[in-house]
Amino acid sequence: MFAKFIATLAGAAMMIAAAGARPVAADERDLARALALIAGVAIVSKIISDNKQDKRDHVATRNNNQYQQHYYTPQRPAYIEPIQPRPLPQKAQRKLLPGDCLRSYNTRDGRVRMFGQRCLQNQYRYVNRLPEHCAIRVRTSEGPRRGYEARCLRDQGYRLAHR
Image (cartoon, rainbow, N blue to C red; front, side, top):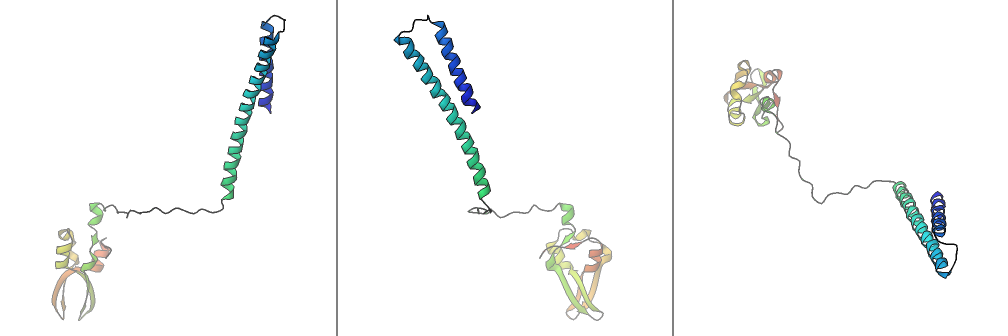
């Protein structure tokens, strides 16, 4: 509303300025020019008003659509790339023992859980860094076995890697 008032006021000011520059004699040309000027000002003010109204309607429509949607439905991508985990740092890898090497043996003294020495040599890079006091030798019904006691290695900070 304020914009219409200013547009009308500007149009009237231009008319007065145009009329003041000419002599007072009013012939048909001056009348036609004045009418053309008034029509031009009216057209420009209508265009400005419509433009502002369109912006208001656009904002109102956008806000209404935003509140009408009550739930969110995610769009699934056509292809999901598998996530590749980053490798652990070497210092952390040293403390992870392969799960395939963990064996359980029945002996005269009871059940013993240990990592087989030969299996560790084949699957674990840092066998030479394992603590010596965890190395054991047990007699089983299948013969003597060498390896590292699982509980001792756990106490030293070694963990079982995922199988």
